[in-house]
Image 1 (spheres, one colour):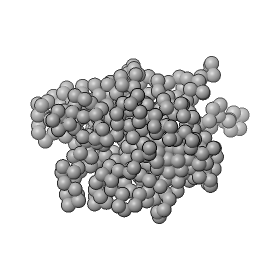
Image 2: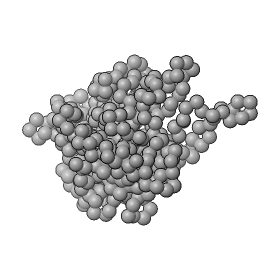
Image 3: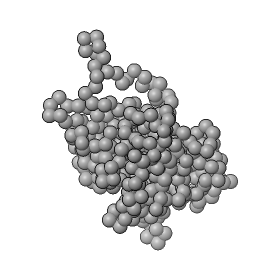
Image 4: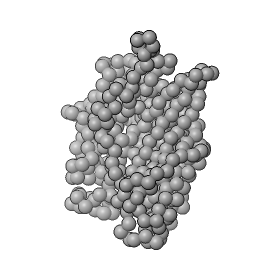
Length: 394
């Protein structure tokens, strides 16, 4: 059976602040944060208290030996339910009674935007997205919070509640409850969460059943460090960077819940969300999970206008190579080919509001389990002149 990948996102309707009203898309009443409005220094930056995560290649080496089957009488015990490999979105744990399964995910983030409220909302959206990638739309959450020891008491009292409120509002939007959490003091600011659900096997979609013939549709491709413009002033102006930055910020804060629900309606076979490993890295992780010998062929990458040029000039983000780290990206969904157009049409219908966009980005083909960037050497996923948004599917 032929299939298609799809991803949902907050689209161009959420790209920029309304110049006259100072508001935009996901947050109709949103105004840009001015540190002085909180009584903080004009030079105060949330990202000044940030750290970084371990790259994918290093992480996988560190986690070798973590995934092990238990031994019974000296013999390797077969799992009661297919396990998800390291690098996938969630874990699946069979419960001891009732034939039920615990599906759970956890993640945390350092600040990547300057607005504490939006950072909290982005975090909530990303934590939920790991379950959304399995077609799960109902769950419960915990919040994980690290307050920086470098912050003054005044900064903690003014900034931390905004991050917590953003996380809480994302949970409310996802119709889930935050039932507890953990808070510590740390050199850096970190915010994250745990999303958990107990369900039956037929209530979620295992990401291991891709079928030859996929047609790819993805959204949310961006360069999320676009504010670091001092190295690329000759390529784009400050104004040209600001709009993509706002688009990326509101995209990241948008939940993938609509797409998760539609996965069941249109018989999706597998999905993943595109986050820290980039579209190439997460496609590779998804490929390793498949039961069939298939190749994921990626031939198109949607990119926010001007960001390809910025990525090249900075030499830092590997955007065109598909390994640029993202946060709270879109869902990459594998659908039957005959369902793909209907999925695209449905998610963009007025029923689900403005702003959802989907792009065809590749296919699933016969062959060994691997990811093949078509028409390019190494892992180049887009041509050199691909510095504007790709055409959405219709």
